[in-house]
Picture 1 (cartoon, helix red, strand yellow):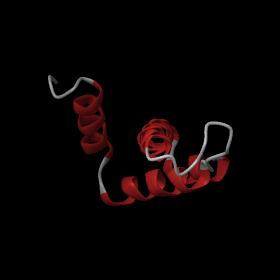
Picture 2 (cartoon, rainbow, N blue to C red):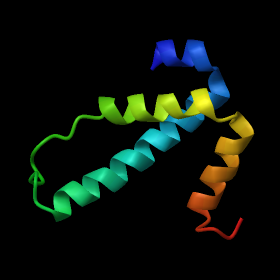
Picture 3 (cartoon, rainbow, N blue to C red):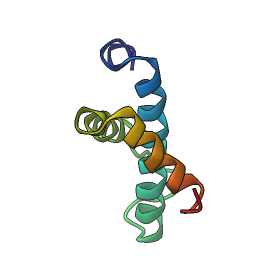
Picture 4 (spheres, one colour):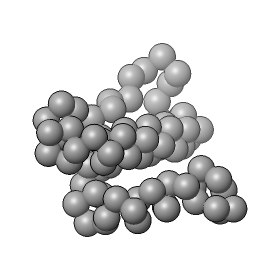
Length: 77
């Protein structure tokens, strides 16, 4: 995360953290509902950080902020 922060900057690093937690929550809920893993088994967090860090390479910071605001406000923004 420190190396990503040096590469992307502080604002994109906050967005990467939020996106990685969001992706991890969604995928973890799906994995637990489909019973592929049990509650006491670990789900690695690294792949979610990698996916979230690829997105700012292709989108601008303002686009990411608008997308995250729409997601967290359930489309009312």
